[in-house]
Image (cartoon, rainbow, N blue to C red):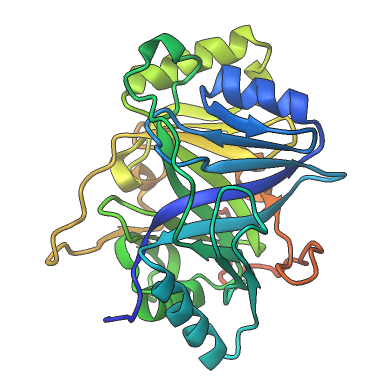
Length: 329
């Protein structure tokens, strides 16, 4: 569907954490993110290949929440076009003027149809790209932010909103026998996804994913995390997904926010690319090698905040029911 704006890619996440020093140790020494800037209440982090100021913001707070998940758009005019769309749909928007947030320009925030807090912006300060500063590499050597995964009560409603209204395309999906969409991977950049939606109690953010340059970076990250005392924070993997074909590792940060380290998906730029359907009873879609995920992977996710009140949103049970939950990447 043609739209009047250009959403480029997943751009940043803002997480509330309870202990900045513990979080700094985990994300920098363990995951290998780079600290661009910080103060007594906030840390700004980026991946090694990222030329922008940050892709992850850690804010000191009394309780862990997700403040916002953010997308970069091509121009300031795109922000105005998005605002017009949301207002036409009766969705209340919030403008953050340039200068009100560190390092980024004017930003638009809104709660999506599922209750996930969204942010859109066109400008962010640029910094030195450290891709070839191999002397600075540490931990898992995280390169760039890749995607979000959201747990929502109605996946089909989310799918329709993002594909029909926001111009996202679907790469892969899981459907029930009666063709109800159980989970979907959708994208703006030419990879498998910028965001995925899974059926469950929502709105919650299931995980934030960082792309790595190769599988051995992921393995080395496991060794470093274990040596740093974070072995119990390794939740699932390393392994390969059937869905997306990606090599993966799921971690829990010191506050329980879930981070995926991710490598090995594929190109989706061709206009005649056809979405790949997976059946719920096909075990390969979960973990290509057959291992099951722990129960916490199905049941636990980060609560999200209302963009207008700043208060945590209550969750609603998933619309589709099944004896055992199905997981996605």
